[in-house]
Amino acid sequence: MSRSLGHQNIWCWGVEMMMCDRGIQPKYYQRVAKLRHHRSLHRYEYCQYYSWAIPSNKAIEAIAKYAPIVEIGAAGGYWASLIVDHTSDPNSVKCFDTKEWGSDQEFHDYRPAKQWHPCDRGDHRVLKEYPDHNLFLCWPPMSQMAAECLTHFKGMYLIYVGESDGGCTADKAFFRLLKRKYREIDHVPLLQWSGINDRLWIYQRK
Ligand SMILES: C[S@@+](CC[C@H](N)C(=O)[O-])C[C@H]1O[C@@H](n2cnc3c(N)ncnc32)[C@H](O)[C@@H]1O
Image (cartoon, rainbow, N blue to C red; front, side, top):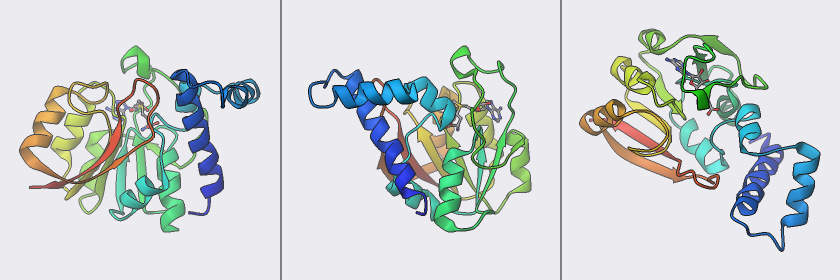
């Protein structure tokens, strides 16, 4: 991955923020405090600038196998940019987001601070134009968005980054559809923020 160094830095920030949040302070506190001071970084800022989930090389490699990919709710397209770096193909991920700020729950009402990969305006309705792509959902909101995507998705593989049923991503209808129509074929643990239980799952249509 050509941007692995920067990526590693991000990973380190994630680890250190997590340690700080968990109170594992003696060894790391000064470094974390310095990072906080210089970068003013905490989880919300990380989410705004990068993504709601912390990627890893392993996760990006696992996703890249399923290119071409269409991502709905991509916001700044950070994960897409890493996948494109990995595949060296700018067309390996097509990103969409409604960008109707405030239409989600308050927690998701934010504006990405940086556009890492081009993201067009669109929702589940664009999926009919990408029957040969696999679907990527990263931290879909707790609205009907993820279930609508799954309903309209015609491809074979779903890549989902978020929490499991009952968590703070997607809704009940999404997990019902998932159980009925898909089988899990792979998962990759992710570095998690304190109090967050997200991971990457890959599903195949039954
Ligand atoms: C929690 S954010 C996750 C953003 C990005 N995937 C990430 O990991 O940083 C949820 C995103 O879904 C988008 N969104 C919400 N409802 C949507 C819909 N119906 N169709 C497409 N995008 C939607 C929001 O605008 C927001 O960018």
